[in-house]
Figure: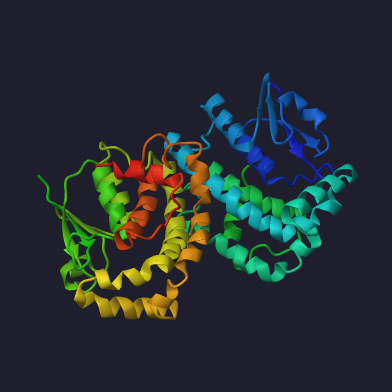
Length: 221
Length: 221
């Protein structure tokens, strides 16, 4: 059997897998029904994935093939395993799913980062902490604790960003229609990121219709 | 041949067809290669479409069948004319396109309205003006001229809302992939609305990559 290994961002606890992009890759592999092992990876472990020619996870090693970048991994799995359940439902579905991908990358993930980023350093392996804090504080232009200081108020605005998703889910069970597709896993990965990093922070209100969808997507194994 | 009639929102000039939702329906009909006539309709012409059981356009009368609401019309055309070019590229494509639909309805169209709404009353048929102004001023809670007073500054924020689209179009020619699909027409309709209503207002910057896409989608006949 072909060996399949996913390099997956981890915290100090090697079981804490919090990257939204790695969640996408994991869910895509599960959706395809493919067995795989994960290797916990930390930001400092650049050498461990140097074979991929770049420095970020997810990296998938599928037999002899190396693939990185969550979208590229999904695209690869769809082409390499055409007989397994489709992630996109065809070329048009894949093309339009890219809009979901870019919406989540450009709008949802930055929105979540501003709410949870200060919770991340204590969860990281010690060797990652200084790098993470310095790079993110440069990005935000202030201490991470200041970024999230007002999050209980700012989460209201974040929740509104997901209104288009709620409007879709008022008409169909999943972004992918009657069952979850990669479009669902993209957003799911972001919510899982927040849940892993800030389990006690109420990213969504208790009565948010998205919670039921989130639960159902979690069921994909 | 089956008669096909689209009730289409018009200004005082019956040739001014500015509704973003009617643009979607027109583009969907063109994409399917279906011939149709349009009837210019004004907000006050409730009786003219009373047969549809509701009061808004687009309304399509396809032979004996009456369909209203732009999404429902696209869905109807896709099912009724399966051998004509697909608007969605399959069930998954249609499901994910709904996210584009809701994003444009919930984010893009309100964003455009705040920039152009004061330009609309002078273009309307006299019988529509009082209704339009009163209903929109109630919605915005202030005179329409105040809503748009600062639009040259506020358009910057609006343009950023379209960043996910730009990121998609950096990777593929259309939201639908290699050729335009209904996902493209949804956003196209909104830009056409702004162009029809406020032709001298620069909704997009002169160097915006979206302009090339807009032009290409315009070519669908």
